[in-house]
Image 1 (tube, rainbow, N blue to C red):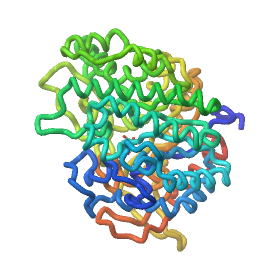
Image 2: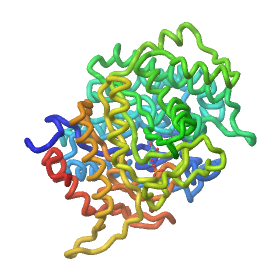
Image 3: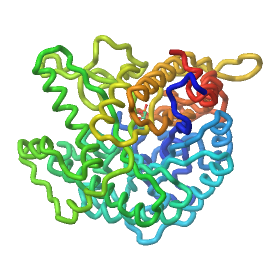
Image 4: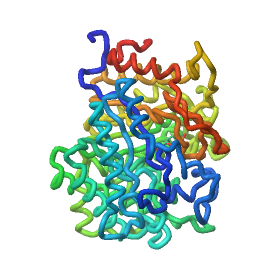
Length: 471
Ligand code: BGP
């Protein structure tokens, strides 16, 4: 197609995560993960053991329906499918020396289906799925031992799947650790909160583990491309005052440091200043410093919203969507869950990341969570999700603008290409998919799948390589 900015070979697809899609939380030899005791996502307390109100225990039963789901992705024309491997399917407790063969065999079957349909796998090694045993016995990533456990897990995956999987992501949204210690770092949160010293040490351990996995991939699966994965969020000053602009710089630095370390191989000076000013002494060995120099092949990220930031304490009022800090932007509309909708922000973040790191970029999450209404049209059950089509169209138009700006974008995997359990609230009613799944927040439903209006729309976008987008 000539009338499109998207290059030939641009990878169009969708994304999910094991804990939000698979279900079968205790089948196939799988051990518990932190997600199995988070019935309300990050919006509520953990439970001591899995509880029946935790929708993730069944998810959308993808563990048994993966072939049907992948066939639907193929029907849309996916060139790539991002999914995560559940760490506790491979190492049920996390500190074993031998992997669980049943877990490995499940992902062999998933890869078989993807290969059958010519869909490129893009695998997230750890997507908020730390084995619960590691959280409860070691304190999650606060313990340096986790580096070795993760290294063994990553090596197992590269040895088993390295010839079949070209694209790998080390940690999902690695920069969410300080904001969601239990979900992101498997760190149990005591009454008074996790001491900052421990949080930053956990961040260091994850960065070292990510870099070691990158080095192992180069040894074991030389064809593999390893990317980091960060949560992106353009931050605008609430007013043009220099104080607000500086508040934006400080907040931006808090997020950009992860990509800086993954692409430059060392901690930047502004981060060392942050540690000094907080009185935090990280335990960093010479081996750690050497490990960190194993930089990534590409940078991937999620994009949903932008936020505003201010230095004025009287205006520091977080909106519903400000789960990673900041304040609401009075110029933007929000989704039903308060996430502020800003397509131009995606162009800004693509330019910022490209200008800063000069690494190929991959958008591995973008989508609109909304309450969908199942209706019948011409005798077929469907959802007329024009709002989702508008959201995705406008964001993809901005991806095209960024490509015209000279940004090297490898691909785009829309988040929640099929309805799955949400991470922040653990609801199914917060739907993202091109495919409706008949399951409700109270656990009822047939689990049947239905194509939404956006299913055909996205198939056209893929078929036309973006030429069908409305600019
Ligand atoms: C990101 C996670 C995804 C996904 C997405 C949507 O933070 O990487 O796992 O859940 O957010 O968020 P939610 O599911 O809370 O609507």
